[in-house]
Image (cartoon, rainbow, N blue to C red; front, side, top):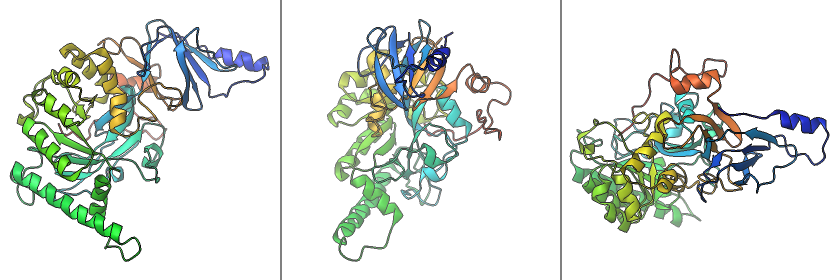
Length: 439
């Protein structure tokens, strides 16, 4: 399937050639490279050093550092940036409980099992960064967390960081039928919006008191209002679950009233209001499914939303909402988008740079630009072919999934005991159950 020439580095070392590259320097040569920030490169070279992209280009145009490990890839293989999943529930995540509809103080990071098989399934699908979200049964169900799927045994090992060192994430909000229920939950769409407005008005007042008290006595600490103040300041992105065209417009009104940054998620009826979404300058995180089912408000979910959003100029990412779409089959969604009329370039961007922009991590991932993190996927062929397999997934220059590895292949393909957590020997397979998503 492909040839790895690891012997080259050993020969160079034995020859004691001076000015050897770092042992962590590798050059992947021979594949078609899709850098995203430029056109595809046939018979390309990707040089990775110390966890970052060092160089990318045509094979005869990129100098391979002395002493680098050369990985020779067979013709037909493809390298692309690691997939950024803007909306997932891997890690058995949970958020708010049934005590009330608005709980911004709940933190997804406090509930995630990083040894869950969901992480390994995501890697088997080529996903390297993920926004792990609470569910959508609340108007505000808590703080999301952005994870880099590097090796680690604690959430702090995987989490992206804000500039202040805190674990990076957004705020999950929702409207529509999921958050409607019996008291204390709202019984109507109108009451849902009213409760959200009231919460943000209280958060505005709290933020003002904090500013006024810089040299005096601050108000009693309120973790929920504190988190919403981070939304109001622009620190946290709102990730807003919404399906129907009228609910999408309600979300935009709330954003305009309170000035927070927002990504609309799911957007089943985006095709109905693509021009309105473009005029509102709101990005969309879209999900596509290839079979009917789910809730009534999503009955008009159609793949034609993808090309409609592209034509309207709406920045569009794709997401799994794992388990709604199994993370291992993420590439299929982009293929569906193309079949519906989306361009290949927009489809690639929807899996990479657009999601990175929505998570405020585009300075690190989303393209194979020199200086960015060495997060990439090696595919057996065209990313949009149903016959293509993820061969390897690399995170910061470390291989995190290898189809040739027996345990990894078990996760990718399934089989006896494929869906079990860490077996105590550091081997993580899949997981037979988990959060069902919030589609």
